[in-house]
Length: 501
Image (cartoon, rainbow, N blue to C red):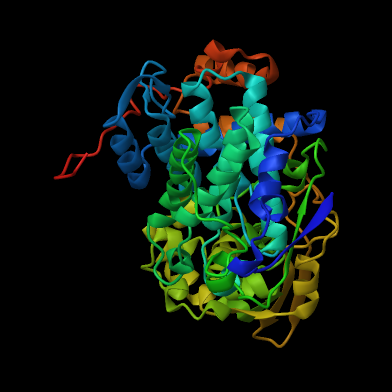
């Protein structure tokens, strides 16, 4: 790996292309790096994971809306939509829109946390959709996905967006554009312009994950990916982009991020070095914001140790800066304590999540979020006894550069009414690569079967799992079948209202 220093340059300095971050990203997207075998297996795991959560969310309202919008843009040789017959094809950017929304809706796929946040699996729907429309092979798809992960993970390591209240999809636009460059074997110049256009068009604020969180949280990554596809298409036609997009005196670092005096360091592979960043990412066992995963596991274990939860006086969760300020009481969002809050808000409230997991000794992607569950009197009582606070020890562990030492957990201190204390901590989720039960292929397949049970047939399940595990050998015709059709009884359409499409 190499470390790239990125800072603002004046227009008079005329920063050369080869010294710009977007160009260096484009160079690794267009190189001929050897594909790492472990990375290939993880790509397969993540395609299975994405399919699991996309099918499980098939009839949720945002997914239906996105799917109906996509269906208004049919294309004879286009891309598939998750859940529908492979004969149904739409323009690839709209397939990316529908499928990306389905993947993101349950907040249940992979994550990478460092200086910023990310769900690198958001790269997959767009890259797969373009691969299907452009008759690419399984190997092409693998290369594209590996580049998407590589770029997003390393941007997340080097550039913090959230401290400036910028949503993390600003790293997704460039990563999708770079991934498409690898998929389609584009020239470095074309990828360079695409990365810049994609970044320029995908900057938005973090209000989408603040206060009363709406369904836009599910749409946001799909929107960024759709814009990235359109950016690549324009640049393939010879169009250019605002440049230099990161380093320009009126550009992203200068006026969106930390300003002209700031230097960022972004790690990137050397040219022709294998892309393995996907191996640093981790998926979710539970459908909730990643920083709650370990604490759900801890709550499940505490459920067995506390006989009467009514005896609890107060619960304090000591954790990292990110966890305290994003999903904890440090966010100062009253909605995170509101039993009438949206599902999207509840899955960003560690107080709610910990209360339910502690009461139930379990977590479920549907049952744990129902209005009836959120409004249970005993839950509200426990929920409102929980608070968080930052412990710099956990913040330091959160930012540890060694992936084997990074921690996303915390310490829970339970004060009982009789004056006794229960204190336990957890470093990482059980399913994390460094956890008690790391997810491997068996667990990804188990998650897939659990989430798709009763939604797809056994025959369809076997067909998809067999096909995806043979990904490297799939030709373009087979890749078009890398989709899942739900049972006829599951297919529903939203009642059409007055819409544009």
